Length: 486
Ligand code: F6P
Image 1 (cartoon, helix red, strand yellow):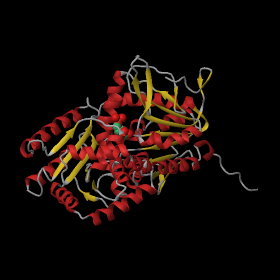
Image 2: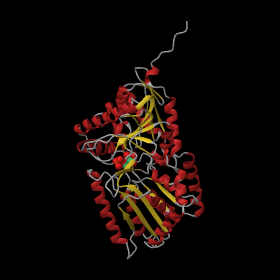
Image 3: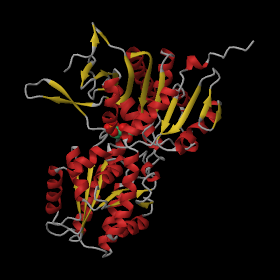
Image 4: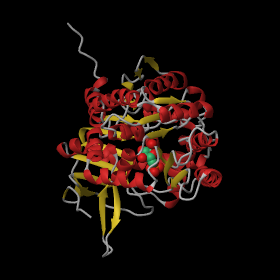
């Protein structure tokens, strides 16, 4: 483990601080038992590392294990500041309030949210710990950028401790309409938490409008368009910044010889069918995996194609496995895949190849290259980066994307085969159209989608947000009234 960028015992104060639930590294235990940290493959960290390295950046987050206290350390030019979490906090703050209350509430109540007062108390306590860590590490007038639904109270807690900072917040998941959000017993506290920021970013303009309306109705502040006017003279802006991916990085990976060879191998292993359908998701009930597999199986059952013509590869990476709703989903999908393959498969030709596992970026790229039709059908999704990654990998302008209109990505990838994931017949029709489409039609659609993600990649996203945050004036400056003219 690195020693940290420190002066004496103190970590050097940072000009740009990222606060996220997780640190951007994974722990690796070496053969000799020592611990090292490997940069995790996320788009956020690759977008931010150039700015972090030039600006004395620090990243505050949970290191991934409970009940341990780690000192700040250095990793690839970034200071990492671990925030500890007890086993009980992991259950109440992470599995409980974040993933069994907020997650379903913010995703259109696809599952029923649970409201427990002790989960809320834990959420407050852990948010406070993150805010204190940020207050300790941020240089004077630094920019602090807080990420996602697990940390919505940090902006206000941090502002109390450090009014000199420019504070930004970005929500990676949807922000629900007032009618749903209002179920939350702590709705006002949560809105006030977010209002500690100078800039609150969302994936879509509709989410920013939901927030503005709630602030007006539930907190009673004056609002105009994307601005909230606080009684102390501070102004908060709420705006959409649709997140993206490292487009050039994915395209380059897809073109690389090892990925090309692996893609060819995958097609051969699957028996070189005419069309390969692909789904890649976290195993989450918001993703619509069950409905899409049913739709595919019905196309075979109805005789539109056979298991020799087409196969479906579904990768579902394990996620939040101790949360009840996730366990139920896993059992449901296991059963469904068993039924479908039992009914429709032939020897050596399952209708669905189901992999309950996570894969490195290279293998994902090979799957994207190997597949003809990517199927992304969430009931609700903040953005969905898998859809964008698939498009980035189709550098020959081929392949089809079947995409739920309820994924944030649908606002940009308009040339996809758009579907309503609640409408199985509609989904079947679009999957069949993608299956039968002529090359020319596919190329026209893919070319337009590729243009979109080349123009807005993750570096653009981060730069746009940080430029707006830099232009925001922190609270204490706003209160200075202009001198009266004599
Ligand atoms: O989409 C929201 C998100 O929190 C992502 O930021 C993250 O990659 C994913 O869900 C998985 O989250 P978790 O940290 O719960 O494994």
